[in-house]
Image (cartoon, rainbow, N blue to C red; front, side, top):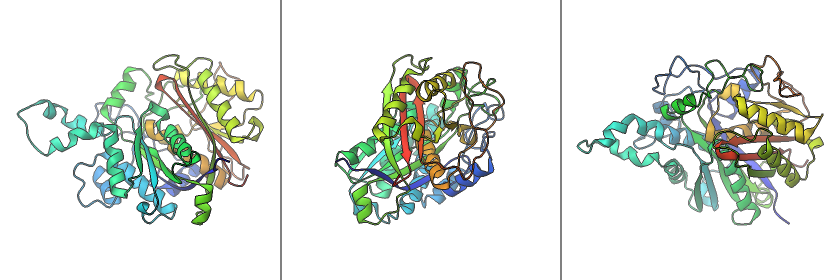
Length: 404
């Protein structure tokens, strides 16, 4: 019988907090982290709101315990801060004591720093320390630097499937455990704001100049964000042997690809529907067992119609409470799946459902509306967490109360 996959540690940094507890307090206080950029150097600062982590790169290096951060990009530093907390919360003092897989996600690697020196790189006459940053553009650079710093050597790899990246990282780590290849995997993603991503999404007319409004009739796009999050996954038998404290179970998962369009989902939500349906089937739960859905909910025109129709197709007239937490953090791209997986664990452990901020009215294409209230003392046993990316990459996770 395949091993159950337990979540035994979590760590994160986002626009609403530098650790899991700070994120929880902001969610409960309904306090957004969206505002204007202070650290990313962009012509859109003061015009396009973003979910920026409230620390300079120097402050992040200090939080990560680095005395010399040469060659460490903001992407890597965010990842190191989240990784430290994840290992600590799992009670792991030395990651080298057990063969551990590290599955990391990023969409643009260290572009946040290489784009600052782009013209210096192009000039063959220029020399200097900036040359050390060239290779950080590779998405795998942050993965390897985090692995080297922490001591992961068994199986280290990088996933980059746009906005579903870290959800897919969690799936991959869980599959390695189920297959018996490792007993522990640390999975998640890290993403820093860059001029490239801000300009790119703005060119696609996918950024709202206001705070984003997921599933709202007046939505007009997303707010980009940055952050990092990692979850420690362990086989049930291994967690029991070392007396780890299970926070939740990753009971089901599925990714699908509808191949409808490079940047738009299927209008009927075909890929999202299949990802949720198959993830629930794998978990052994039915639609009636789900109390909360942390939706992808970007607030873009196409995504919310597609995802909403998929919810209506799968759950019929009994769609559970659902909300997007992106009005708190912004859309953190490769880190979003792991950040929202942690919010799903918190929903189960704290028995709360997070509000969908900024909602004013139902979309005319849908019969359903998101939850706009903070629900406390809510009996949450199973959560579906969705992450859908460009290229038709659809990923759904089912996170369940352990022992349920």
